[in-house]
Amino acid sequence: MRLDRIELREISMQLLEPFETSFGVMRERSIVIVSAEADGLRGWGECTAPDAPIFNEEFAAGAWLVLEQHLAPAILARDLTDPTEAAPTLGHVRGHRMAKAAIETALWDLLARKAEVPLWRLLGGERAAIACGVSVGLKPTEVSLLESVERELDAGYQRVKLKIAPGRDVAPVRAVRARFGDIALSVDANAAYTRSEPRALLELDALGLVMIEQPFAPGDLLDHAWLQSRIQTPVCLDESIVDERTVRQALELDAARIVNIKLGRVGGHGAARRIARRCSDAGTPVWCGGMLEAGIGRLHNAAIASFAPFSLPGDVSDSRRYWARDIVSPRPTVGPDGVMQLSESAGIGAEVDIEYLDRITRRRVVLTS
Ligand code: OSB
Ligand code: MG
Image (cartoon, rainbow, N blue to C red; front, side):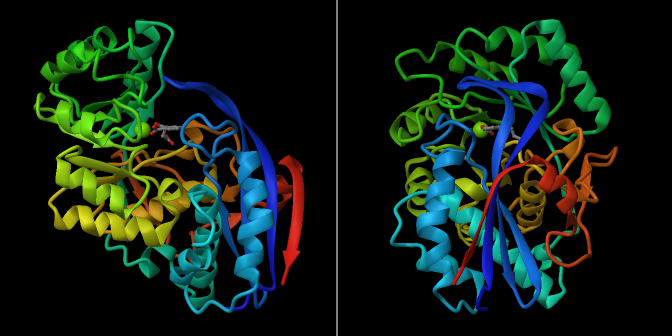
């Protein structure tokens, strides 16, 4: 598969509502979109790096430079037979996994379109429908939090995750538990806590949560293991899980009993599959996380979530929760049973709305071999 060209675009999209986490508020997103072209077909990928380097080290404008100057030229110079060769081809660039995943996922979509099969089937997915949960951002008041959770439960989501931050944790989570009873509930701290102030985390252990996601800093596997040895609730790692080595060490240390896999954070579908298999071999459930993706990224998430080891409902939710209009058609939706049906169409299962994409494109560059 020799590519004719790679196109990079930076688009700007406004979230329907601000999304607040312990690391800040996201209102609009600059998103880098990659398309890879060969034989008259186009595959699409979406870079999940946020505007600022606040979740991990990556950010959209930085990903653009790495893609334009290092990753796209390396891919264009090679004749790849399979998207699994993308990772080794880009191995000389350290890190920048979200930028790498943007190209790698575009190659998978391209190959699936060429083979005229749905991407989820090409990846070895085993279910045509995936169970969906939602992530609810920090809210200014308890009333608005309860309203948001009620809306998501009415929509049918199978698991609700609440963002927490120091001082905004035990009381709001307890209020949700008291109001809605025995729902599948989890929390996500986005690394906002430290081992020296664990009290809130220990108190949350009494609330019957499905998991506590990433309480400590990404590199802090030992402190996560320390917490796991003191609580019954499974610790889930998100930011920490960047590659196979870290996941192996986390499992060996008992620093995580559940793993959130994000396509961008691990570098694409190939790495996500290997990490998922490793976890499932160890008996550790995994699920597919999200980064407030637009339609292309959301459909890639849905495709990997169909892979058997993804046994828990992920953060792959309805595109209409985040965007007034999406860049793909049909847009990814979730039914009243909290299930997303996967398409039998080739590739990611939807067409990119080029007219809309053009309208929200802030810059564009075409690279050729
Ligand atoms: O930690 O899972 C996270 C959004 C942005 C950055 C980090 C995270 C999130 C979410 C939202 O929780 C998941 C989604 O609905 O896309
Ligand atoms: Mg998280």
